[in-house]
Length: 119
Image (cartoon, rainbow, N blue to C red; front, side, top):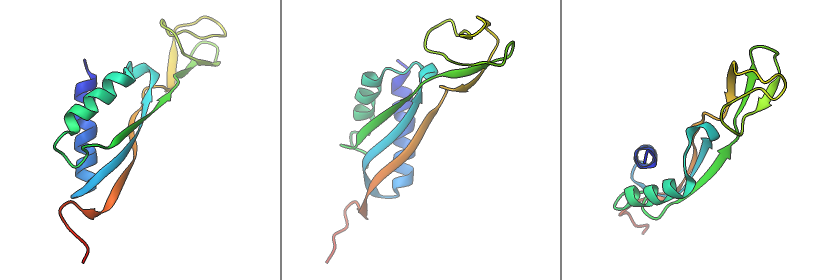
């Protein structure tokens, strides 16, 4: 289950950028070709975030469809099934232009650092 290692990286990134503040939300873009199961990633994120500044944060996953440009005919095709194939000519020589993303797009953080109180 590679979702666990992905979740570990997401939590590390979120906590590093939070700089002592609590993370309330993580927005993630995941390309189709990453073969990530959203429910498994969400479960893994909750597991790994436990005890960190990201504990209780929501994980919002935006799926990015795959597309590629055919190196034989130049057509751009949506790539939604394997094997990846040009929809215009049936060719298999493609340059992937979308669908390989795995990006922490944004974080929502509390303003105050954990453990500090306004007076």
